[in-house]
Image (cartoon, protein in one colour):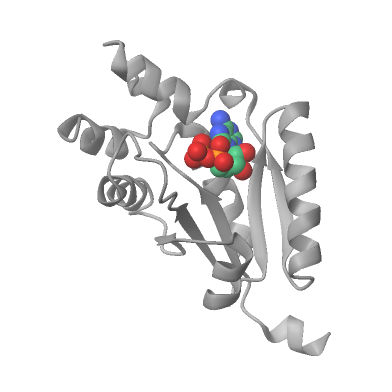
Length: 164
Ligand code: ADP
């Protein structure tokens, strides 16, 4: 117990962030005071070409949290719990929008706990206005020439516009 107390509280917030949305931002900002560090971690899917390049996605995360000293970005391949172990993170942070999210997250969270008992998954509820928001909707709006600016953090949107 004593060991845990002296350990730094490092959380990983995993996702594909293609692109980061105001929903992601809100969860991360609200969780930032609870941890010493939050690593916003871009899970790289080697079989799927993303909408935005990895470099652009990371730049959007960095720009969004330029004012948050304890929020950093990273990318990783493979199992999320292995990445957590690699960087010494003891928490996984996830957002919950709906009951469907809960069921999905419950199985991942419970399996992750079985894989790595030391890593706890922490959930934060979405702000009501962000409940219908996800990255795939943002991509659809952009593909069809709509205005996605209300759904993407301002600094990230600037980068997004230059890279599409
Ligand atoms: P991505 O949308 O980046 O592909 P996910 O859908 O897996 O990745 O989301 C990563 C994390 O962000 C998950 O914990 C998810 O619940 C959370 N999240 C996604 N969209 C929102 C939102 N609109 N509000 C709050 N949390 C969200």
